[in-house]
Length: 206
Image (cartoon, rainbow, N blue to C red):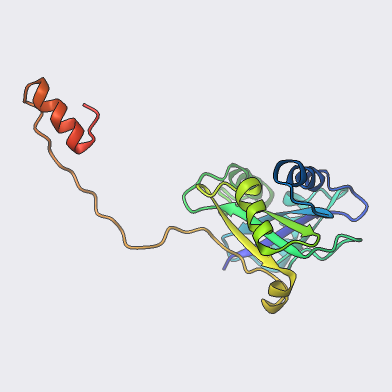
């Protein structure tokens, strides 16, 4: 069973990353927001006891001075960081997640394991301001995510409340029917003109 850890800056610590995103939304896209709060999300693809998860949250994922971590529940609103929209950006299945790989190695060291459980990372952006869905989708598409390699979740606070006020752990997995390997032999014994025609027809780059 997968578990989810969210890490947020403490209420007294400036969210510099969120401030940069807010400025870029204004200057690059003309989208005005009151504030952007960023949350780091780690999904562990393993069935670990709550006390182990909390230990990992505190020792591996959060800087105890600057940050706080929450296990299997959303990071609460800290200070005045209220929001109207949530955008979460994570990797699609099969895309290399270097931060997740590093976290997996750190977990192995902390728990004394030969190999830690798979870890998948994401970034959550909480947007405060009078925004409609079209503007939020444009912010995700044109600034916050690369659709080729990343998945995006967008929820208003009302939709989040209807979902129980939290997001379930999401492990990126490749789904669908397996494709059998196909090996085909191509006759390359022809002259240059024949090979050129074959290359054009079959896109073989001969």
